[in-house]
Image 1: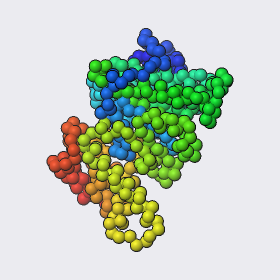
Image 2 (image 1 turned 120 degrees about the vertical axis):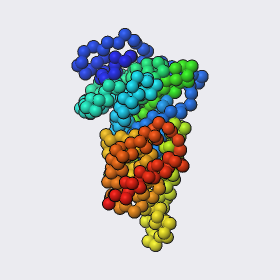
Image 3 (image 1 turned 30 degrees about the vertical axis):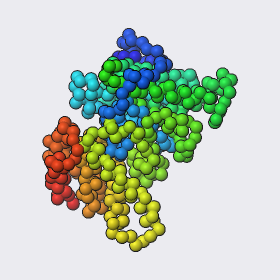
Image 4 (image 1 turned 135 degrees about the horizontal axis):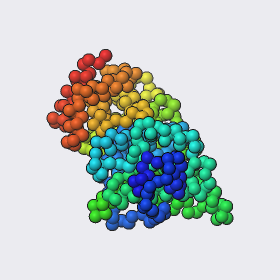
Length: 414
């Protein structure tokens, strides 16, 4: 463990596998330690920004939270996690030498193809995100015990930051493969198989791992460890054994759906089924004040859209709801590797819920958003800084300021 691991790729035992020479770290830690008790903990209250509109607004994640990312294969689970790592770059650079603001990332690849891991590391290096990231890889060609151990040793590396009053984020990609490796080991050891042939203690396998992610109180250094475990489902079956286990351990989940992914809604987050059980206390006031409305309007839209398929003559208010909902759904889309700051998300969502998009065609929403962001990053720089530095509700003078920038941009948009 230690800072010397940052920027390196190691195996499940902490040995370097990136060919950049030995790791100069003297500190060693036990891989499988007991999780912090109840006394050292504190409730989650600081935001952990992912830079993704759909998540930061509707399923916010706090530092010290465990938020499951669940979905079928090829629904963009790793993409969400990767974007979260890339999004920390701006925050870490802005923090300078203030360690309490920085967020170190640990990415654990369990049972993945080597080529996939190499691609990911290349992306992290290109963007300069490797500077604050450790990659732990137990690939498909590694034996089962390595795939089983990798998450634990990676968590021990992450706990180095948590216990020194800093903040870390750990991504387990993915825990279904760890469970499969553990099942293989258990069956070879002749332990009696249980449901789906998994051993009886497979719940404990994941619970003891995820309980180590916590927010510590100030007596213990006020550090935190946030976890984003990933689970792959088979054909959207969330009620299988491992998914239900991990859902019950974590503080919420982000559902990614194949259906949405193919419709072009990316990130393919199903906002109806996704929840964050501690999130709203970790949101900034500005975000909280605009996010509530977008959640409600999208929920009403989903309800109405189901009805609207049957009837043709809809009254004006229903039609308005459907129009607004279609535009908000469009607004929640976001390209990969293009994270947004908290302030930018606030302004964009405010534009959506305040009717600025209602006159624009659904196809033009993304163009409007791109233009608005460009405008805010140049002419509206002061406004973005104001939202970032002085966190307050979007009301009164702040609302006026946001409206002024939106009006200035909207009148020229065509």
